[in-house]
Length: 176
Image 1 (cartoon, rainbow, N blue to C red):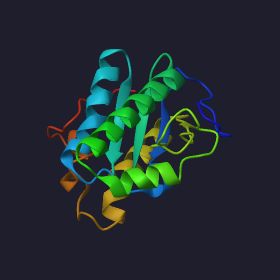
Image 2 (tube, helix red, strand yellow; image 1 turned 120 degrees about the vertical axis):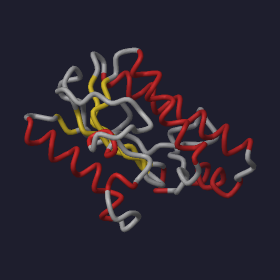
Image 3 (cartoon, rainbow, N blue to C red; image 1 turned 90 degrees about the vertical axis):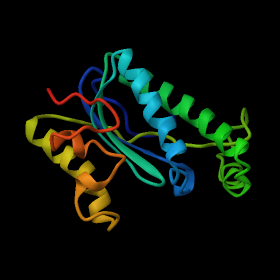
């Protein structure tokens, strides 16, 4: 899982993770870009990934997720979404962002022209119900604290609506 000093301590337990675009470049500003992430999560959910909570902001996302091989699933997610996002940016001629992804790419990533995600995911093992609630609340309040919306349920790209009894964009697991 990259060169991060953080590791997934128990891959079969829920973890809070953060995925950040290289150099905090704002790429998730269009629906089509966010759909790449959500579609990948849907696919992995069909293969056993449990998504308890999520939020996608312009340059990062937070997830509370669990699977039988979480490290492998996160690696698959990052690999697939990176390739799809680079393809999306190239197809839409977004050269400025592509140039940044090439410029900030780590030197040891010499097998590719671009690096999309920062290395690592800074996983935090969810140790109890209290911590699970705290992380879910943090995820849902992220757009509110940034001043993007007044209420968490107003942020389209999060599971806050699901926890408020509304229909969200991604099926989530609310039983832990």
